[in-house]
Length: 372
Image (tube, rainbow, N blue to C red):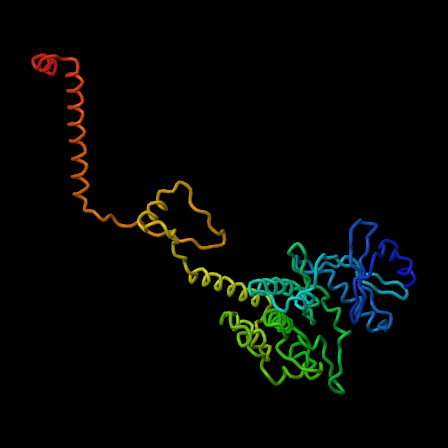
C-alpha cells in the first residue's frame, strides 16, 4: 500500500479520493495520467490477500476485462504489485440502485422494468462468454446521471460472501438475492443470475425483497422451502402478465425459470409494451368543456370554425369527435339557393330601373332607355 499512500499506483494512476468500500475491496477515483481519463480502482483489502483469494481476484478481473457491453462497467486493467492487487474500471457518474431504493423505497413500474431488462441484456452478454455474475443485487447496479444503466462486480464478490451452512457446503452470493441452488452449494448458472435479477426487480417494485428474516442464514434457507410471494399481493397496479413473469423467474426449481437472461429480458419488454397499449386503449377522453355563458350550439360552432386549435397537454390522448350530421333535408338547401338567386336578379333589376329613372322625366323616356 506504500505506492497508494504516495498517491500514485502502478506508475500511472493518480489517486484522487476514496469512493467507498465493501466486504472485499475499497474503491477509489483516480486519474489515468497515461490516457488522461477518470477511472475507478478497486483495491483488494489487505486482510483478504491469501493466495487463493489473490488468484481468484486476478482471474476474475481478467475474465471481466473480456466483457464488452454498453450496460457492463468496463474493466481497463489489472494491477498486481507486492502487497497490492487492484482492478481498474470505468468510472460511472451516478448512484447505485441500492442508494436510490434506500431514498425512494420503490420505482415506477416502467422504470423498474426498463432497468431489469437492460441488466438482463448485460447478463446475457456475460453468460455468452461463460461468465456468471453470482451476486446480482441493487448495490451492483449503477444508474448514471446521463440515464445509462450498468452492472458491475462480475464474479468478484464470489469468495467474499462465501458463508458456511454445513460442514461441507458453502454458498456464494448475498442472502437477499441468492438463488436456491446456490444456497445448496451447487454451481451457479445463468438461471441463478435470472433469479437474482428477478429478486432485485421484486424489491424495486415492492420496496423489500421476497423473503425477510433477521439472520442471513435463515433468509437464505427460507427460499428452499417456500415460494416467493407474488408482486401483486403488495402492489396491485402491477399487471398480471408482469406478475407471472417475475414469478416464473423466481421459481425454486431452476428448470422452471427462463433458460436465458435474454428470454427474461424479452418477456419483460413484451409485458411493458402490452401494458402501454392497454393504458392507451382504456384512457378516458375528457368531455368538451363549454363556457357557462355560451349555449351548446354556439360553442360547437366556435370550436369547429376556430382558426387555431386550443392548446392541449402533449402527453394527453386527444380524440376528434365526428362531424354532426346535417339537420335539414337536402331539398331545403336547393330551395334556399334558388330563392337567393332569384332575389338577387330582382334586386339588380330594381336598382337599374331606379338609376335610369333618376335621369328620366317621362315614362316614354324610361321605356325608351330600358328598350335600349
